Amino acid sequence: MPKSFTPEQAHAAIVDMDTQSDRGAGIMIGAYLEYLLENCIAYKFVAISNTMYDSIFENTAPLATFSAKIDIGFCLGLYGEQTRRCLHLIRKIRNEFAHSEIPRDFNSPEIKKFCDVLPTPGDAPSYPPERYNRQKYYTVAMSIGTYLAVIGNEDQRPKYSGLP
Image (cartoon, rainbow, N blue to C red):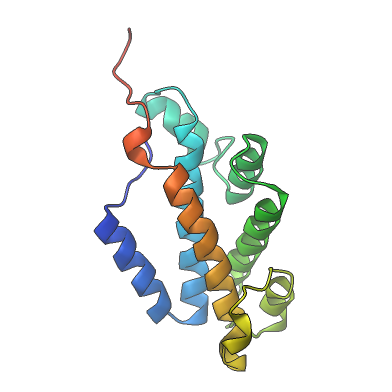
């Protein structure tokens, strides 16, 4: 079944993200959005067993990857094309941080090229230049995350109760 955070755990995770290195923040924020997206997708399902859930989301299952979750979320009408593009950019940034053998930060060309395409939040010009890309990534990701948290509220999801 979907993993769940208490509001306190979610808040602690978000606060912790801001204390991480660029690499840590890039990976954690991407993972957090993937978690929220998985819950939103599962919310659209009828009540299913843990076994069925795992056969859809775990290991080599059809929705095991962040990319697959992003595209199916779009196909389910959870969000529009701009959010889909942003999620794919966030996924690429997360993957670049996670799979690079050499240190990267948000100003590394391999990361910056994706940050450059993210939409600029209204308050972005006040960011210090050395933190601009990190704050842009964080702001866009948290805007999407807030939206996903609201539409994927576990309290509204049907519970599996076995055979009828």
